[in-house]
Length: 214
Image 1 (cartoon, helix red, strand yellow):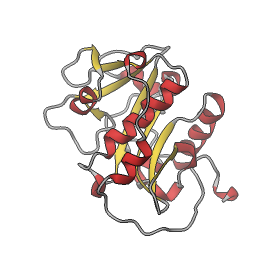
Image 2 (cartoon, rainbow, N blue to C red):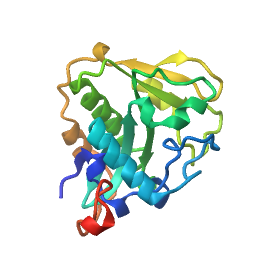
Image 3 (cartoon, rainbow, N blue to C red):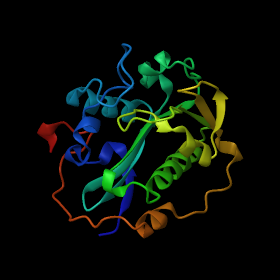
Image 4 (cartoon, helix red, strand yellow):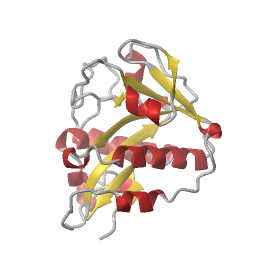
């Protein structure tokens, strides 16, 4: 079965790691410790995806193989990420879409999947006529594996530049209009990555679907 890129609202609930499926770090409106799973609430996470998809549009991309999520990236206007106002480099620009987080399955890391997901997100936003995108990056000397931030070196390699410097959590920005025309077949690149073989599973409920609708 070929690997596919799909909208975050369409991925399987039980395909995401437990700490990601219920994590509402960015969606929480009280200051939290900067770690994935600082607050987990499965129903709230599902409702968030449903609400954002309905009000703004698809809020992420996921790489799926045989029903299993290899990795995903999540983004939306910053009003949907209230935790962003507590970032030490200051609040995000209110009119610029924000990439909140990206997670890669441990056995799929270091194989180019992060770059594929980022390019898929940037392509989606460019096609939706967004002019730029912002992201808080983790610039800590020793990045924690449960950090909810995308690594700064990775973001810089993708073309982001520092918009608001900070020693640990700089705010980066990328001008989508400066990118070349999208001609790359990202799906073909995804399918060519040397990733562990997955066994197809059942078709479970999606993130935007309550359990009773599965």
